[in-house]
Length: 259
Image 1 (spheres, helix red, strand yellow):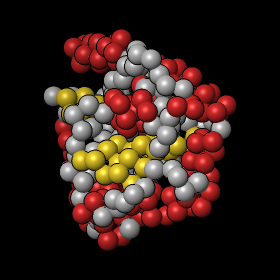
Image 2 (cartoon, rainbow, N blue to C red):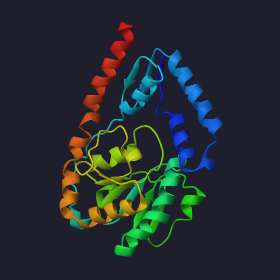
Image 3 (cartoon, rainbow, N blue to C red):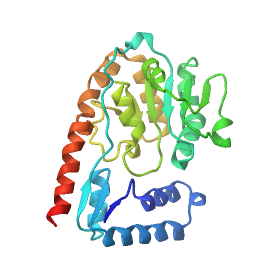
Image 4 (tube, rainbow, N blue to C red):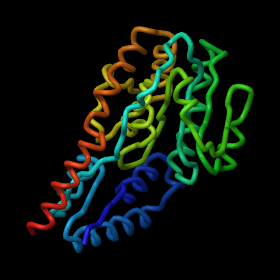
């Protein structure tokens, strides 16, 4: 019996409460924690997507934990250069509450600081089922697209991607997807958690609104920094290629069979 956590839900709920107590009761995250730990203890193997969550489970006396991260493949086509790109990109399903919180924080607290320096910068909010909180953000500077079947043109034309997550858990596909296209990312520490990304080498990191705005402006206006981060994208996702993940899956299956 294999229990694939996807992410540790209780950890996400607990972090949500730390940001805003109205988002989750203490009883809710504790109940979820009890449920998840019960399943992990009952399973022959528990799978997490990051070493961070593996370590958390092992600290809570869960044995036989394996890490199988998301799979990412680098885009093989031509990439536009720094000068020919424009705009900021965010992607995420708005059924997932951390994404709603992230774009509201981005648009209401971060971008007004960015627009003081460069009022021409626009944002595209990709993702299905935008909630009322997201739809109301739409303006002449903020494009809320709803579901898009092929998002490739957005990754190929925008200047940078953002992951302004203030809480969450697991491995963030939005960052891996951006790296696939060599699109530099500004992210919070929560966004990069467990991905072994080095700030200033693979990504730019900021956790407060002022710093996040500063890093956006820096990446948007500095071709040298942009090219460095973009060029390092392939290296950043090298651990997440199909070949690398196949080896991890084979090792995991062998571990189960040997038991």
